[in-house]
Length: 112
View (cartoon, rainbow, N blue to C red):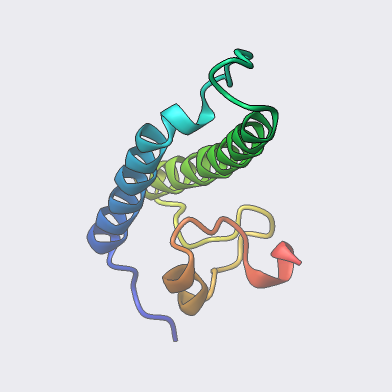
């Protein structure tokens, strides 16, 4: 027998995660900015380091955006009453899985 999902607690956690990701995104905006080509103010190796840092910041931003997308989809499932059910097979998602990842849309079997 499964325990009923505390939708308010889940919504609160999803909104907290969303706010945290949005804040991280805002704070990393400068790191993702275009690297200037001015060789006078930045040496070649420093510029390469800056480009590498920019690429890493952009990759992190893509991951944050994907996670934000998953969180927003989970919030929509909550609103529709579909939260906690696998989007693929319709079976209940294990409570433990939802505790680990409240944005999970698939049961463990379908996620593999």
